[in-house]
Image (cartoon, rainbow, N blue to C red):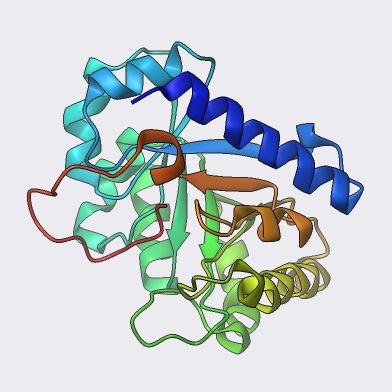
Length: 238
């Protein structure tokens, strides 16, 4: 796999999408999604200047992170069970997949025990897919004050994913609604929600046009991922 060529193409597409939207390309951060890929591939991509990596499973990340450069930043983007909250707090600088008040409360408790503040994104299920995790918009707005009251959590924004489609243009309403939901959340909080984690390999250009500040790129960068050891419960990763 020619990681350099893949990264150059992705960066070119990001710049073009930003040009169409009248945005500064520096306003969009690239996350390399390294699920099921070995430390050797991660190191190769890191050598090209990528510093932010996303993992879906806590245990897989904990086994890989020690074998990767210490300068890398790690976000959890997959569904998190409460019984893995302690390990997640220890391993990641941000949890992008906070999808319930119960999980947020457990993360807050574990962050308190670790004497740290944890940056989080709230995962929203804008499309209402039964197979996806995430807050439905009304529940998100209703529980946002309680989420914000958890003193060890810093809410930086929202994460969402659009339904799979071979036509990326069909994802536009989902990303647009997520951006609108962030604005509604800002009114509830009286504070900005600056991070919109939207867009994967098949739809990141549309997501950027609709306001994404962080795109999660797996397949377009690493190529097809190896066969997983076991099935994953989340696919917020490509």
